[in-house]
Amino acid sequence: MQLDITGHQIDLTDALQNHVREKMRKLERHSDEITHMHVVLNIEKHVHQAEATAHIPGAELFANVDAQDMYAAIDSLADKMDRQLLKQKEKNVARQNGSHQRASRHDYDDS
Image 1 (cartoon, one colour):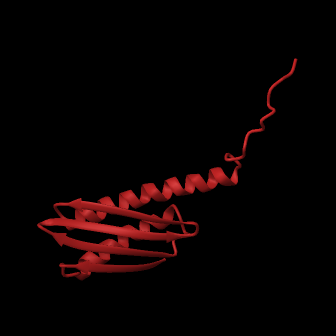
Image 2 (tube, helix red, strand yellow):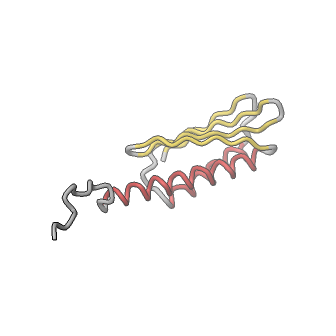
């Protein structure tokens, strides 16, 4: 997975970048198909914002979090992305198992 980290109005320290990398690598346990992820960290009016866009085959996932602490925002962001990846994985598995097949219009019994 290619990971890009951008900071707006914030100094991206090595500790922040390492924390983002560590949290986002944990997402690969649910989906090894993440090709690219872009994380943006921002501080606006004393509110720490973190947002991420993940590109996977067939979908693009986005999450946005506001918090009072940047590390808490990153942790919440990772949790949100994790839930979205699980949901997408479940959809793909259901699709592969044929749960979206159309029901026959003639499934009734004429007896």
